[in-house]
Length: 196
Ligand SMILES: [Mg+2]
Image (cartoon, rainbow, N blue to C red):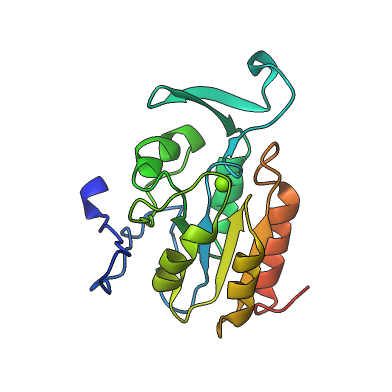
């Protein structure tokens, strides 16, 4: 499965082939195509929670070691991503890059891997603007939603400048992907990408 993913490089060249995992049962049950919107999914602050007050023994998710680093994985995120995959083509938009697929499908109970973006070593913790070029290159003229905990003014300006419908959804990193985010994302898609 893993070797089916084509690395989506942004450093310099226009990709020859869209970075798409083969459709699978469940997560990507609808065929990927330009008529479906893209949902770019951040990991840290969306799937992996941080900044909460509780000790790790009372963490709001499952604490696991990923490459030796403890992460608190939202228990609810997997099921929520599954529901969103009914409406969107999901991609990982995270500094985890390919490592997202090494760990998260199993941890989240997803049936398979997702396409992922790469950032040419430009990932910076605590911001998200370094993702813009890669997200734009992937989404092209397709409608796009992006969920992230670090959206700044440059992200909003970029979203406003896109010709295609674009929705930014910001999370609280202590809580990650919440039910209200899912509702808003699905409502936007079902309303033909108009504000609801
Ligand atoms: Mg983040």
